[in-house]
Image (cartoon, rainbow, N blue to C red):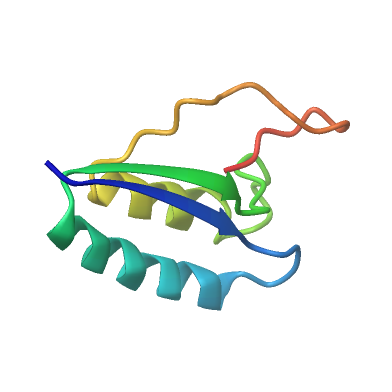
Length: 83
């Protein structure tokens, strides 16, 4: 069984294009491997309700493809949980 380890970094700033590309990437990757671990810093603040792309789009993409976010504690100086 094939295992993929993915390391991603999304620089701070606009991320709508990142989400589109990430969705295509994940879609392609799930064809080749049943076991995938994604690590990295997406720089997306999932608890920022004023940003329509923040929580819904990123977490929806992960959920659609059966991924689970395991780290839920804030891990920044500002106590903000990130994806």
